[in-house]
Image (cartoon, rainbow, N blue to C red; front, side, top):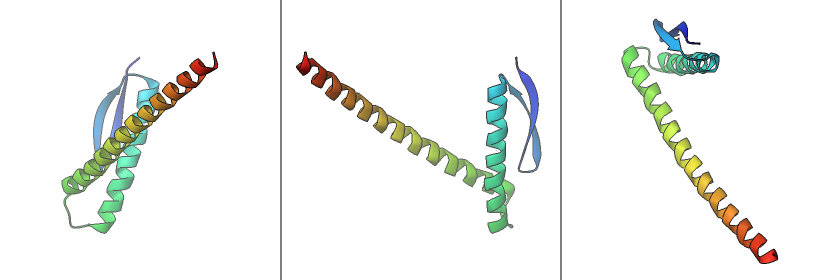
Length: 94
């Protein structure tokens, strides 16, 4: 059941809808992580506008997501290769 929640990000509240309790937890954890990173940039660059700091947070998170996706693809390919090797080995045993 969908839940209306409010997330505070960079000092501003945003009303959101979490479709499941698991998604609500993920959204709250994401907001905490965004705030943690935003605050670290806020300390380092106090004169920069909040939007600039949020853009850097977004860029860093997107780069990390893309790197993870590429790594997952590589791991999937390695799993496929190992499965093929295993299938070949088992076929030779029979």
